[in-house]
Amino acid sequence: MTVTHSVISSAKCIKVLILSKIQNTFKLYDRDHSNTLSTLELRSALHAVGYRLNYHVLNALVLRYGNRQGTLAFDDFIMCAIKMKSMIGTVTFRCLQ
Ligand SMILES: [Ca+2]
Image 1 (tube, protein in one colour):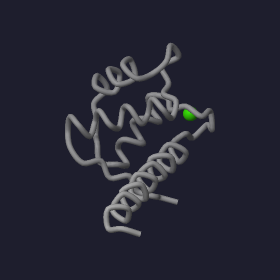
Image 2: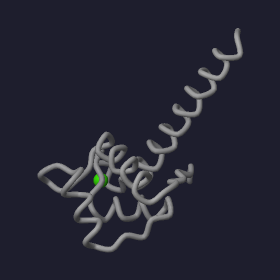
Image 3: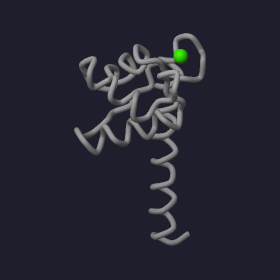
């Protein structure tokens, strides 16, 4: 194994780990096991990773990334998290279980 291959493998491991943590956070805060996050569930999930958002910002996120029912599927949650990270800074997803 070359050094370059080792670095690429490490980067893939980190991406898988981050995705796993995001998935754990999503599952943890999907309280009703609907496979989507409601506005309140999203607020709790984002609060857990360090963001305290007001009602207007939460609604804007749900309107942008959610579906017609006002909920976010896992893919939408990832896009929302990426946007939050790019706008505000580091998002630290913790395994809380
Ligand atoms: Ca839910």
